[in-house]
Length: 191
Image (tube, rainbow, N blue to C red; front, side, top):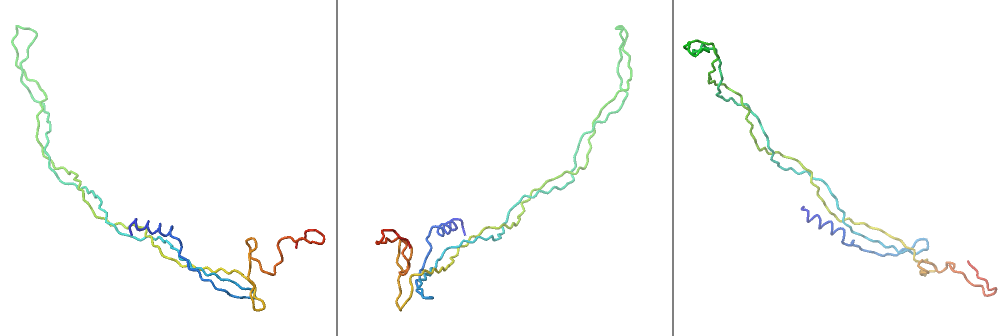
């Protein structure tokens, strides 16, 4: 159920008036007549539960392997060799003398070696995840309430009907609730 349907159900449940059906019956018990009002009310009840759903998610997985690789490089090699050279003195009139000196001589050699090189690979791997999604269900519940109101007494085959005095129910043979004036003495008397 998508979100728009869920919102429409909840708003409808909150703002619609409750459906009612009233049934009125009369009964007598111990000489008192009662009016029974039976109301059947229907109201929506919203329940939420979580359902598991499986989703496929793609994740990156990196693996690193070592591969053999050959590489070529230059290496300096230094050796001492006798090198010939002319030697002169401070005397400008003396001839130069051929002499040999022991000197370091550097040469470069090429070498080849095998090296293990790390190679990283990227793979996209599907992964299944279970998530819990809320699911809202709305159902109609029926409630029944019964009210019993005393409306009169039953005597000599006739029923005495209640009348209203200042918003309350009163039977015919109840004593008065207001004071009466005694005309003989002019005093007010309460019962």
